[in-house]
Length: 156
Image (tube, rainbow, N blue to C red; front, side):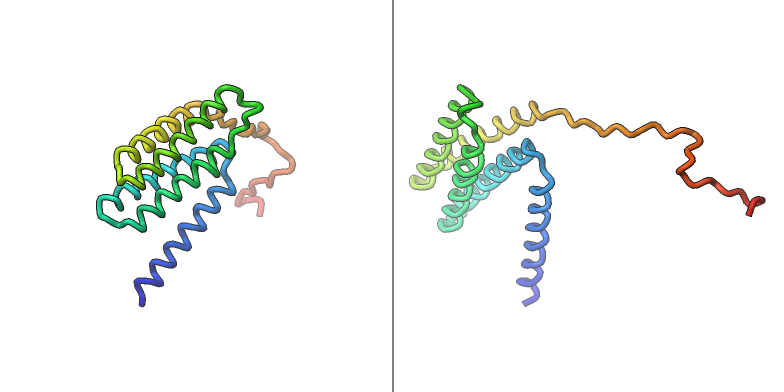
């Protein structure tokens, strides 16, 4: 009884953390999160394949395919991205197909190949992250009339 409620609480807390991270993330960070999600789902699928957990493996692979197709692939703008976007689209299609074949044929190597491709793309994506610009703060003069004045003991 307590184990299930504890698990539910942890799961709910994790979900809130992820949702908050998504809301606060830049478009660039969202792509990194998609890469992370697909990489993790494939890692789970490999472990589940090794343990013989067929249903869980299928669910993890379906999740990875969904992230690739409905997240990474859907975010491509082929009109603006030109040849790079078209090449990525073809690569994402290849990855989805490899995951599907890996699932059907119980081929761990196909899953690991896609996981490696995703890691390489994620690493490349992280290197082109837009430089975070620190907000500039106005210089505070030594005698700002709007700031509270320090009161000395003898003045009170």
